[in-house]
Length: 305
Image (cartoon, rainbow, N blue to C red; front, side, top):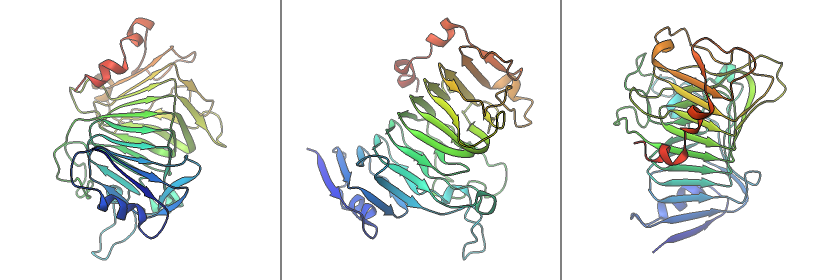
């Protein structure tokens, strides 16, 4: 048995449709008509698909920023800003945009568009748009570096290993705009920097086989000077990010990667590219041989946890 609901824009229309789904594990699809769904959405039902009419036509939009002062006197913080929180296994997003419109970044701080927490999460032909911290690929790191740094819906939850797949997506942002601890496979995606900063900030847990893998992706810059951005920096010391047959735009600095002033990362982390770039990268980054690159397969990725 499968469930299917057609959804049209309206006051909390998507949230109401999610709440109306049966509390079972039967596959369910919410088909979103074109329009702007201006609401903050949480999806905690597994085996559920949100399918829009196209990323240009179906938009889930909200505008929470991390620096907003809440009634309890605390700032909202990064992990309570998400426009869409997915907190379930086997969830798929397809043909839609998720956007956090909080701006300007210098005033609002971090602003997550999509918080993805669940094994076998899939995102296809979607646009994810914000500035700082656009896409969070859970889980959180084991420990905070500062008190209440992880305040939010999964602050005290177990750090569950998980696999995410992103295909034919456009992901926009400026500072650390793809970040987190998931094993995440990005294929044929546009990774678009809209301001000077860092495209990725992985926090791969120690001992996890895969961190971030980008295959045939395009790292692009919009209106940026040459050599103004980095491919990534490590949120934690075991961060892994691998680029395979990717296009690297001129906005990326020749050294490519930053160590975030973490000397231990030079030995514990893993940044690598194939084919080897023409310009020398940072000394802690690795060029891969074809044989090494071929060892990264999607089938092995899926079987890695």
